[in-house]
Image: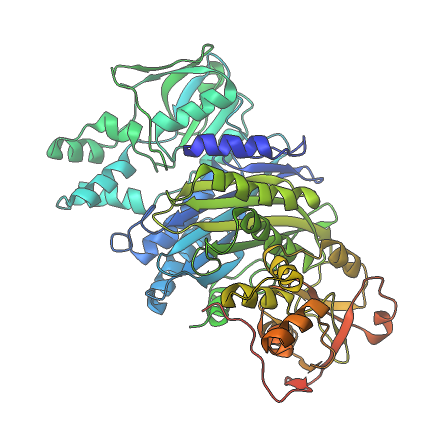
Length: 312
Length: 312
């Protein structure tokens, strides 16, 4: 059973109240009585599956643990309001390591004004495991979902794709680190959640569906298609790439399109928008494709099919 | 650094808004604008630290993962409103195991009417890891904290102590299972959160401090003492014990007081109450001690000091 079949199976087994949006989007949406909706998302990171202790500094890991969760709130256009951190610590983890980890977690939390409100600390026999839960809010009916894309919408992203995958390639292949490589590694380890951009985009009724890019466009666009019952054409020639990624790829013979479609963790926002509204958006973005009324996925400018990153 | 020093250190490093109660209680308390407070709690369970896969059935583990988190909301007198389940699954976990786990999680969730609203599923290199987050609500100012015990309060519990520790002893020592042993093992693996009792107790202004018994009275009463700046006398002769526990202990030469003070996971509520109000409580409870104005902890009827269970 793959990750998405499992989620679908769990979703079917757990009926939820009609006014709540539950399993299957970036966050659960729980309407409150004060004109707001509470958004909640949770993410688990396990040593050996999601990170290698020797390859990521404790500061970076603390930052990234928070960032990927803040990004889930940004993905719906919400404002993150507080986080909860559960840590299972093996005995090999030293106090100074924990201090540096918390420093990274604190730095990004303070940058975006998001307090740490609680959590859990416990022991682990061997692997460090981190589970972060973030809550946020959006105005009633304002949170953007995956399920609301419409045929003829333009598909857009808020920034360059593939930098994080490029940074991971630098780490895994041990490339010599010039300034381009350093830039990409930083993009991989210290991603910035698009909170401000998400909140602005949530203000446009013509922005229909939205999510963050965590598993790569190849995987993520399929979620919007499945949840919305639509198809998509991605123009692989229109994908925005940083000059650093392009130079690194050409230096090492890597394919920039593969990195940006198969690789995940860019944490840019992926959204669909009415073409008439797209021209009025006051957020930097790139148009990379179009939603169609059938259920097919077409990669224009490429004869490959891209699947994105899969967790199982 | 032990668990509680670490939590204290994290608490100092993360300033939180004045109206929010954060790190250091069973749940964070976030005031909303509609007359309610949102309560949130998160708990991580790691294979090998918190459970042994061969010793607990998937149904029991699913039940217990939810129960211990529902209990954190009950501990403050809140009403649990939804849960979030993050699972890191190693490849040794079969689909049928996941089905049975989800069945246990679903059974207790439906028993208490608490929907599963979201979560995360991901892979783990070897150990199954579970992180559950529960949100709930209480009326503004109604949630009971650890920090509000007053001198001369009576210390009470909602039910028998030591059953869970007794059940664990049966499992670990491999005792032959008669009906008493089965009863205790079930108390260990299928605990009932005291949600109804907590909500009723939250309705009494004279109930001052409250928490659930997760690490054992020996540890838990110290949290109330430290957070409230008070002392306590526990009358170890007044501890309520089930007949099943007493019979099992006498059969196997175990000390019933040790089990009920050192062992955790009873998930009964521990609360302090004005003596005049105690007589009016419409919740079954046992008086086991008294809050004092100094900072000492006295075990009446015993010459031992009890520490409860520690996670590090």
